[in-house]
Length: 170
Image (cartoon, rainbow, N blue to C red; front, top):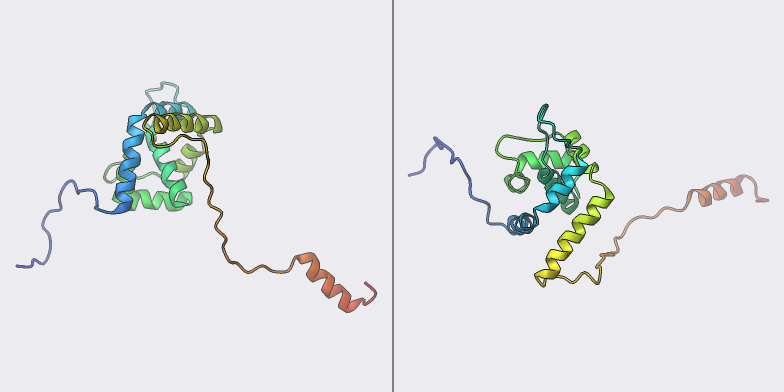
């Protein structure tokens, strides 16, 4: 018999059976196998061993949020919304139920990761991929898809056409 409403929601929902959820689960597994990279990010966040004040985002949460931002092409405002709204994204970033980060906190954390740290992260992950026979890292693949767009005449040419109409000697 169909009920009018559910009296109590389950405490823990299962991870959705969706290709995107499976992709993030695999990425999460790879990150967890290389957990030393979280310490690299933590150094850039400026954690000086203080036990006082707000806890803020962990190095792991910042790195995982940066991965989602890059993969999905989100702005910081969109990232904050999706981390709060999506159970897959909040699970991936290890945020937990009912907790969210503001866009300014996300931006401050992600932008604090230095270029040197990104390079070290890439080396660690490339070493992992090479050891597991996934990738050797000798080639880089770049997508250069052509997209149709309206291209207007350059401003200088438009100005020249207008000027020549008034001053034929141009």
